[in-house]
Length: 60
Image (tube, rainbow, N blue to C red; front, side, top):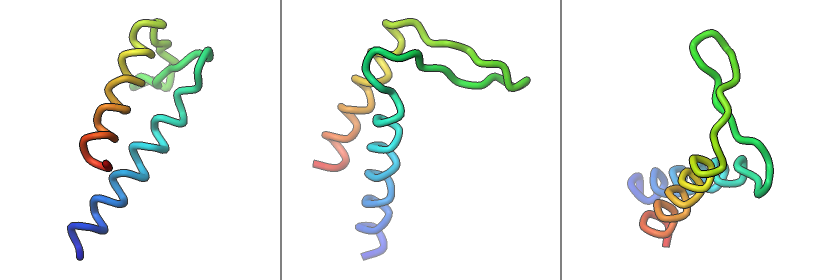
């Protein structure tokens, strides 16, 4: 039961992260100084694809 709950939490987090990468918008992360580092379109697409794959593998 504990493992099932951990998986549910992981799936919610993965889906939340995917939702934060909207189609057609800039995607960025903050560096150590709080400066925004913008991802290229290719990097954004790769991140989105990796999250979708992880969701499919872990969340069914």
